[in-house]
Amino acid sequence: MAISVTEILGTDSLSGSRLVINDNFNVLASEINAMETYFNPAGGTITNLNNLSTEALRVGLSTILLDINASTFDILTNVKMTGNLNMSGGGIFRNDTNPTTINDVAAGPTNTFEVGTSTAIPGYTINRCGNTDITTPIDILVNSGTVGQEIFFICTEGSGDVIIKGVSANLVTTGANDFITLNAVGESVHLLAIDNGSGIPIWFIVGGEGYVIS
Image (cartoon, rainbow, N blue to C red):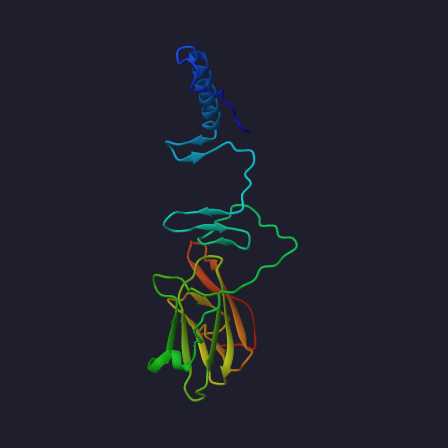
């Protein structure tokens, strides 16, 4: 709401305008105090607003964590939910596909490709894989994820064996060796990391097509 003060003209007596000056200061002080109910300049905070209408919102200074504008709604950091996520009128789209195809070229002379590391969980949900060398299999070593993490391996090329293995017994199947083999385009396996009861994530198969367990 706009505020107004009484104008003091150049022809007015300064001493005679003392009451007007004081009234003007009182109006300004009252409005500033009213604003400071919501704005704390010293703490750099805004509180107690009933409504905020804006065209854009950005959270983060040197590192942007949330960026909302007329065309995008980007969350650029991890999100922790303690309640339910209810969706209506929309879907969930996965677009975190590994840009590198895990194949005999990427595996190199060791014929081994590591997904994730001992200190970093696998970085992509969807991994394309394949092997054009039908005589020499390649091994994909899947490092531990985090509880609740999902990962897909989808064969997109070749007919050679791609053998998916865990690291330090972190992959459990019904096979004797806990090996999963893909060797035809279209075959896939879907893994989910669940708590082993001691807070340690273990990969289990929850879906797929055409894979072989050994």
